Amino acid sequence: MTSQGWRAAGVSPKMLRTLTSSGDLVRIRQGTYATRSAADWAKDDPVRNHVLSVIAVRTWVGRDAVASYHSAAVLHRLDLLESPPSETVTVTLPADRHWKRPASAGVTFHSADLPAEHVTRLYNLPVTTAARTVVDLARTLPFVDAVVVADSALHAERAAKPELRQILDSCVSWPGVRQARRVVSFADERAGSALESAARVVFDESGLDPPELQVTIHLPAHAFLVDFFWRAHRVIVEADGLAKYAADKDLIAQFQRDRLLRDAGYKVVHFTWRELFKTPELVIARIRQAFASPGAY
Image 1 (cartoon, helix red, strand yellow):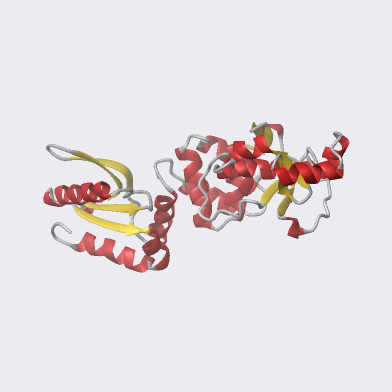
Image 2 (tube, rainbow, N blue to C red):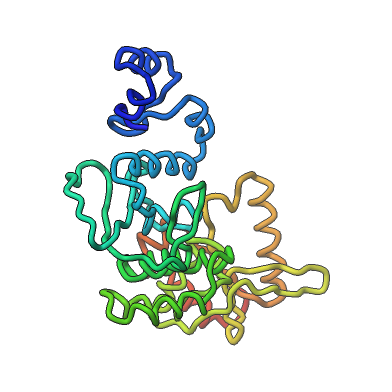
């Protein structure tokens, strides 16, 4: 509750200071406090922390505020290529409601009349559905960022393409809807990570033929699931995210896997986050070199 709410509940300003000093109340945003148990519930979980931030915003904005855009993506646990600061909250207010709070308050406001079928409840909060969230972000984010969100929603089965297209059909006059249609068309539920989604965009923009995603390569004594596969060239490309090699044994297993694939005549290329975003031309060059190689690569 806000400090005014706590006072209305019988907590005097002096007691509020005492409870805050003792840690029994925890300041979430300026003038808004939660109980210690609520803060403990959110501890070490960025999604739950964001839940508290959204609740805090709604205490002074109003109960008609609906978590949307980036905040909705966080609450649905969708991947974001670039996450906003955890304390930054995005809400949608009814179109006839005006809010004059300064932008420095760490809240982004949108104005729209949300149909009931575009709103769900998470953590007992009104939140735009995953499908509406994907469409909103697909209209407003850069293409690669929007593809990351859309792929994530499809992969996690939070949304399906027919839902996304239905929402698009209801918003043909909205700004950015042309890009949103392109995002939905390009999105693929087989992409297993934000890095894979971003890579698909880089591959497409570089003129590579679309690869097959998440293909199982069968060898006489093994079967390996690979991230990207160009069957005509027998080229396998792997996206090496930060968590892929959590221990030395994972790295050793990957070396052994690559050796077996190369011995079977496949060409294997790896790339990292840094390579894809800092030197994408080198990643594409290695893939094209693998295409052209007559043997194992």
